[in-house]
Image (tube, rainbow, N blue to C red; front, side, top):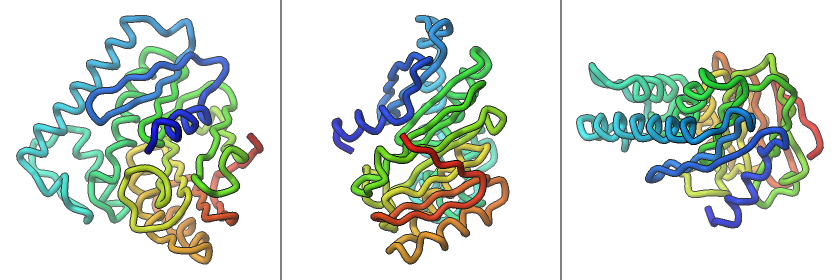
Length: 247
């Protein structure tokens, strides 16, 4: 994803009452929003150490279980696997994907839960996948690449639906692998890891606008998924707990 696209994309989840900071460790590139009163050097350093620790756990585990990294099919973790690897594998098993389909959401959730123990409101975005906990209604803009819906539609999120994972897969935007052609496949679930894996699996089903409803129905058929939205060109399908609002 180009720097320009990335910068524009991140404007869509920014909130005026929160202060945002970026944190990058190797391939992990987070955009994090917290209340201004909560932001300090200690908090940022704590997040950095959390990301370093999570990445180290995954990297060390993958050295012992190379299929965890490579497979596109559901995968069983080995005994003693770290919690984040188990979370990713379970999400993949539920969605019918490999564990790495859940990695961005899983990291966003781990960092979000770390912050949620220290502040009441938090947004963590990792490669288009979001973990959110909020005390007020939030609008999260939808980035759907070349679709005319980009910058025009937002998801309205009620605080009682959070903590929540809001994850997006695309076959037309970004570097992530997709076998589909959706401009955006958005999935909502309490687990950001699961939302990420399901978004990948559902996005793979979209080859044309005729497939949008099938992709949404597939996502909503998975236990604990609360909402799904699929966009291709100037068409969309949505179902479940999805409230659309203008940007």
